[in-house]
Length: 417
Image (cartoon, rainbow, N blue to C red; front, side, top):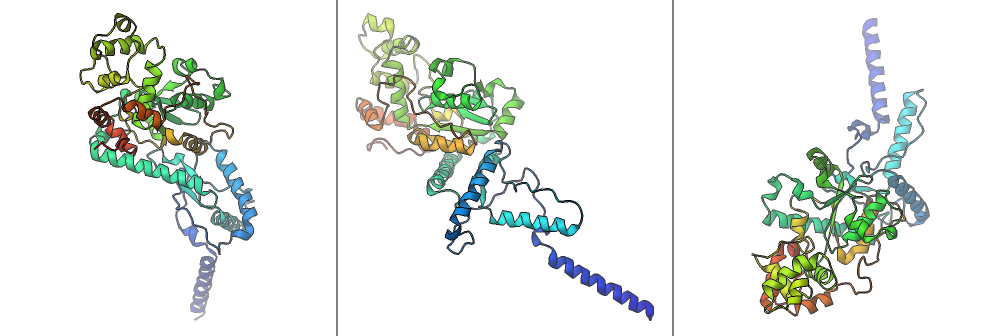
């Protein structure tokens, strides 16, 4: 009888202790803890009027948000997951103190503005932005624009380039991609879409110059300061493609074409005149003068377009007017960021913030060459294309159709189909 009473008492005390332990245990402790390298993929929290961090505490929220931004900005692009700020290590006296510290950490996370990991490809951990409580509508609009651009690009690839995803990446596919290892950035060069200034920015990020204004044009294009991705072995190429932030900037195709023509054929040029100009004049200008054939100068825009559309060109393609889909292989390489020349300042500075570039580094505004000449605009582009027949305009649009489709540019003329 005494043994039975003792056994019942033990069971009673054990059950009471178990109930006490469960009541003190936070349910989140029962879930598996996220280890290093696991992304937080939390949706942005919409602010409510009855939020505990509402209008009465705007000052405290601003101070707290600034502290979070500083904490994020101190990290390298490889390690951009939201982490709990470090707390003093507890003295290992009792389990109760440890549980209290863990509870404080969880409370801090719950009060923290939501973190959102922007999905990309295998290097998606690159992007972390603060939630709607910490960002104004301008930054949120830029993020939404990025999501829409990637969606449109991926849909075009799925529709017209179904076999691309099954192709192996070769050095040719990455020959236009420049590498900045310090901030883990890959930039695909699209000529006439701000590429000179982007290379300047990469050189500053790499610590090769203190200011973009200090870098000359020849240093940008003919120096060897920046490495190309195709100079690495296959393992180095694949490693960077899977872990670095991949970005490209594009431009309205007709404007880019006119910009290239003005730059290469309306100004003295020791390469494009003798190589392209002479061949174009010999093929497409009737009764070309001996002087024109000797120098290759004076090519007119309709003659240049004839060369562009000729399947039997007398001289090959050039990167300044080749398709972006050929230069950067966006259906094979999943770019994390797609910027546009038309919104360069906003897009570029948003990208620099996302990779945690130095705060004093902004995208340069100066014109790289022929600085006294007006930039190529939509109005100037229409003036050049007015020299063409309707059929030539249509064929030129067809030539750049994939670029128009992938990057969601509107038809530049109403009579195009």
